[in-house]
Image (cartoon, rainbow, N blue to C red; front, top):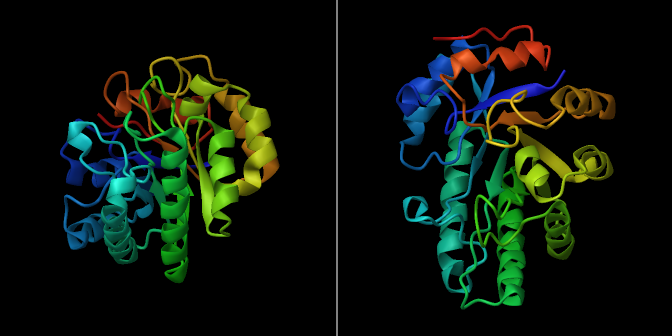
Length: 267
């Protein structure tokens, strides 16, 4: 049976962020993920994880000014030093929170930066990050994202991510495969997962259209969950979707679609 982690950036928004750890545990989750830990002291996050017996399985490297629309800086040639400083900061948090893997959002390339220059910068930055994280026993992930939700994002398709991984040539760089993003960009979900599973270290989900709960759209999640079981995937699946109503009211899919026996809805 797949292992599901609650994405606390997207789920349980009915309560303040630090209270979402307890809400996730109450709903039956044993693991969580979120975009960024950096607004909070690591000790405060550690306390919430420990108090609720939760494992933190993923967060992102610093991604620039998120509120201003930045979605990563790894593709920006003039911000290499900032990227490297962000890697150091991410490692500090990951070690304090026992996080096994960090994801890199490569960002939106401005019109002034050619596609070739952006790609070369991504490769250079990922080489640095993969080596730095490897010294600490932390995996580095890179995530393609769809260009409908994030116009101009520098990596859009599974193969683009795999091609970058090939050029980085590190045994510490893996693909973060987001089912929602890849359904929007390319489809062929089952074949792509099966073909590339050795390169995939983390999976995220949401249905399409709408980026809501599984079962609300076109993606055949029972089939995909069964496939992942048959392939022996033992990583986490991050629930990175937008609940259509309250988070608790929408958790029925875990029992109905995924067969997750321990989930229980919360108000």
